[in-house]
Length: 93
Image 1 (spheres, rainbow, N blue to C red):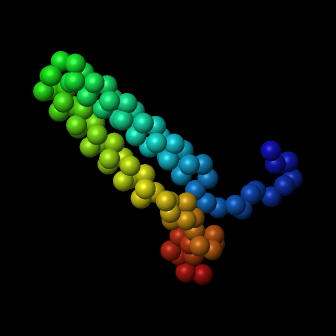
Image 2 (image 1 turned 90 degrees about the horizontal axis):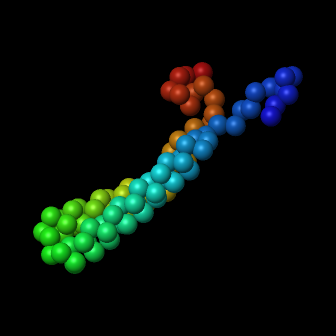
Image 3 (image 1 turned 135 degrees about the horizontal axis):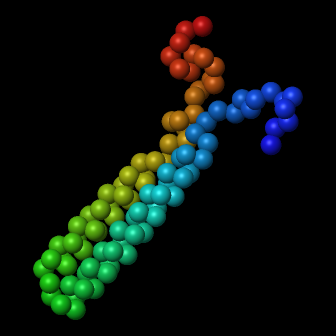
């Protein structure tokens, strides 16, 4: 914790937002896969067409989340300004 006489931190960047976002997406991906397995198991036991459709939809959602997660690879670099100064926000010095 900074002392009262210390200057404020000048570190710029996404902070924990990028990491937390990835954690939430991974959690959603895991839940979609578990739900798909549950529905497809139910379909295997009962032959219910509804369970098969919902299970397939959950697999499509999991695939979409996987593609989205892969697209987040450079998120930290995209959220971090290049020079950290006022011109990083589009203003000219």
